[in-house]
Image: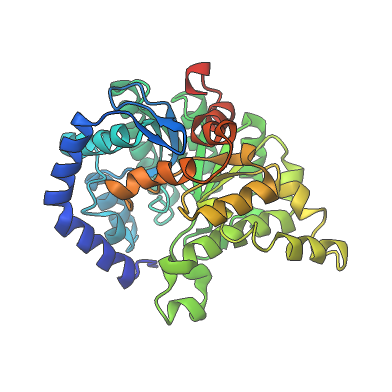
Length: 367
């Protein structure tokens, strides 16, 4: 089962072809950069004193992607040749991007490249592999990295064990799961209820990221729109699936983090709420339930950001870049578009670091 799509592969090839020039220039610029100002909001210096927390960033060692392919995953091409491995060169490039943008910390996640194929034991082994890599990076680069762990869903028992290890032993902040597991199983599938019960007991963050399968819709797949609009549509649908199954209410200690500003949820919120008040399409108010969620800002369109602020409040918004799919100038844009949004200085600071520090239980230095 594969979710790889030609448009994103074409994009990756373009990025990789330009890497030799753009990355070298970006690294040099980062080393020499001075603090910048955007709409009155200071961009921290690149000398290790940056305060922003990027909650949507990916990292995949080549060996890990090879193991996923061994399990039967045919979608790893979108994660290769992106300067997103754990090699010294790729890490230096990543840190240079972070410093240039004023990002102190990246919260790493493996989605959508997670071990969801193969037998339970093999999938669990590969989940442990990537989680141990993340733990090693957190130790090696203090303050620069945090992580959401991989779990081998749909193998529920193994997913519970690895989530528990990631959070209680490795110190991770939560786990990352796909909108569809193995390209077909909803986040709200009843088989996952024991998993959510354990995440609730742990008070974990559950980060939800699209698969790139266009929600298995021929309207998107047939026109190769899997990543163009399919990804944020998956974000929206996954959140609504959770609400339809009443999972946030049943498991109130779980903090749900949804990628890409939650897709189109804010834009459609009145329509969604009306379907509850007029036709009882949900067990309880979706607006009230979604106000308990967290959403990262990997969208980069100011009007969409303002819509989220007005619909759900900026205190639920977290800086997100979608690294490595946006690098160099576009990585910096992930920060600067928030700074240039016209939101108040207090709201900008909260989005760039304060909200994440609160969600992740970090010290005041990140606020």
